[in-house]
Image (cartoon, rainbow, N blue to C red; front, side):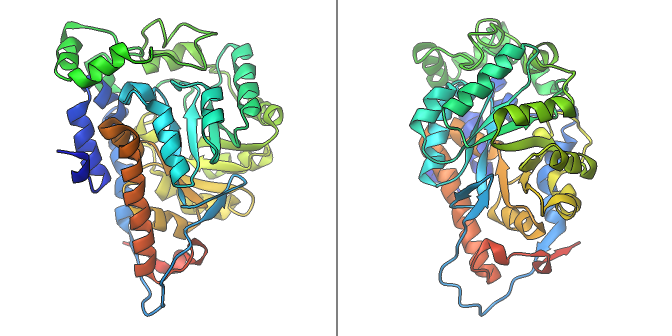
Length: 382
């Protein structure tokens, strides 16, 4: 299977599985407990149908939208995700350059493997920095200041990781950051020599924004669940989130909002955007899908901040359904991580290109000239 054989996200997933050692692939692909919520995130779109209009004379469509204060060329962007240079040696650099080519937002994580300054100096299109609140307050202040100095457009605070989810695939494979060599994992690494040689002989793996403050994750191997459980501040509350918003002073997004009450509180503390997200099903299994929660959250706060539907996106039609409900934009992680693992920057570009083409094609088939014309009038629920 080659990159040219990849025509949808599932194709990229299959190619990623071939090219990654087992522990690395299953870290991307896996989720919490029985992985019900992970599957539900995508399945939720199947319960909603699009109702097209025809004879609309749609030669061209405008896919642009404005979110978190920036106009982007397509209503889909790349969520911040951790550890990207484990999936491909180009990591965040490949993802950022691909997003730049498509004129859309992308984010880097506190657990990124390329520095805030490197990304800020390299990428001109809109960027968000995703903050995990650590027990080390000096580290938190430093990351916020660095993102501001690097001219990031938005700060995104992840609010659904007070403890790590029960990711049983990672328990079975022994996944850690950095990867720990065990008899079982050694066989998988040996069976994927391209990945292994890149990991061993290219730029040394590190958590670039954390390494000067903590050794865990860079020099001390730790599972992601153990990192969350031991390094992050479990006392984080709304008062702390409001203080971070004030310290940042710019576009401020809360990632992991799933209830109307929390969406209203996000407005109260001055957030300018929320990502309706359950962390890709990697935290609380059995929770609702973002798309299933979207309507009631949009109805409650959609006129006061930007509502972003994050997670489960696999098709352009999924994006159109979320926009029709009232989301300003959609975002996702696995949809580009599979492509990154499959082929680096060319993979991410191909995945984004396929999704952009689907959005454009489906808008024409819907008889819609711009995303602003989408509404619940063109939806029906089963």
